[in-house]
Each structure stands twice: as structure tokens, then as C-alpha cells.
Length: 227
Image 1 (tube, rainbow, N blue to C red):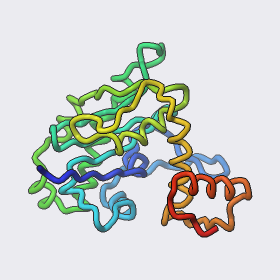
Image 2 (cartoon, rainbow, N blue to C red; image 1 turned 180 degrees about the vertical axis):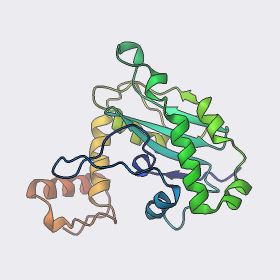
Image 3 (cartoon, rainbow, N blue to C red; image 1 turned 45 degrees about the horizontal axis):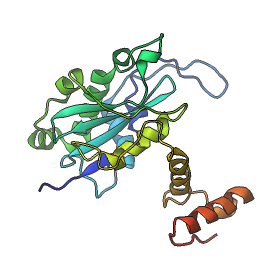
Image 4 (cartoon, helix red, strand yellow; image 1 turned 90 degrees about the vertical axis):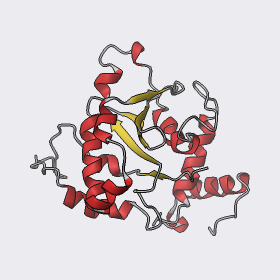
């Protein structure tokens, strides 16, 4: 059995941004938008990939996609040689857009992702380990069957994908408008607050948040944090 290796690239969405927008400074003044440069992006990209993670041997690379206030997940899937898109919204209920329209930038996003990976890992090494034409895979993307979300729950469903998708199928069942979503919210908040990279110390938390996190710690039967 091949080793299942996955990498979740949380901030990459913003590095690969392709939507037309006009950046502004803190005073609201319009700024010139910089041209996409793989070399510049690679310098920032390296901060988000742990030294123990090797993108070249990862079988699953999860890329968050955020557009028009909606969270989805793109997966570069080496098991199937496909770009899998996980979208929990039902577009038949919408009048202003369609699923294909919402994801029309997928080829541009993956093209930029490949350019950055080549810059970070080296083009020769990338080509040696890569057998998938990702741009073509993006064009022929696989809209994976995803359970329907409840109102304003797309972000929590998106975060569930990297933990639940094994490359071929979901290894954990996610239900339509899953009632466990409130538990997911508490779990994610707990993980964010107590993550080693969170530079805000517990002593700086509001009292209510301090007490709530302590309760979550005890409820999850994890080691009680030093508060």
C-alpha cells in the first residue's frame, strides 16, 4: 500500500489570486496591483510549508478557494490524476451564477500553483516526480460529490475535507446539513487558539474566551493548557 501523504496549503489561495480587484491602502487610496511573479510568491510560499513536508511526494495537495464569500477546496489528486473540486453549495437554487461560472478561474489558479511549485522545488525535480498535466486536469476537473451545507457553513465543510477525504472516497461520513457542525466550530476554534504558531498568549485572551477554551480542553480530554 502506498503511503498517503497530504498537504493542506491554507494561505496559498491569496498568493494565487486571479480575480480582478483593485487593492487599496489603509486610507482607501487605490494602489497599483502587482503582476504575478512566481519568484516573489515562492519566497512567501516557503513560510507556509513545513520543512518536513515535501510537495513533490504528496499524493494529495489541498488548496482552499475563496470567491464571492464562498469557501471551497481544490485537491491536486495524484491517486486519480485529477483536480477534484469540493463545493458544498447547490447552484440550482441560485440565479446569479452556476458552478462552472464560479470555478471558471480554476485553470489559471492551478497554472500559477504549478509555476510556484517549480520555483520552490526546482523545475527539474518537479518534472521528475510529476506525471500529471495539472492544467489539463484543471480544465477537465472532477466536481466531487459533496454533502450540502447549511446556511453560512461552507467554511466548516471546506475545513472538513482534508481530514475526511482519502483520495478515492471520504473516510469519514459527512451528512447533508450535518448537525455536528456546531461541534466542528468548537473544535476548530480550540485548535486555532492553542496552535503552537498562535503568538497570542492565553494571558492576553478575554476572560470569557479563556474560560471557554479551558472547558473545551477538558471536554476533549486533552492535556489541560497552561492558562
